[in-house]
Image: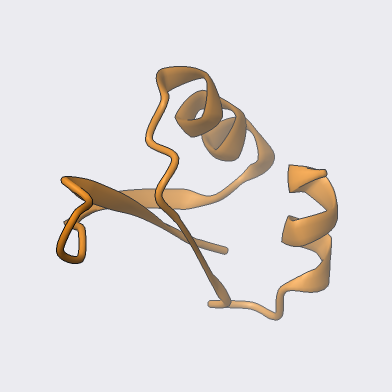
Length: 52
């Protein structure tokens, strides 16, 4: 599913998620995303931004 997201995004496209599990981060990196952790909104500690 993550590969479909990657293919659907235009260059420099951004995917954001509240899931910051190590397995998800590694899968996103393996596909080709550049990752950055960001502070989350109220009620969430952090979120993840993945840029194509």
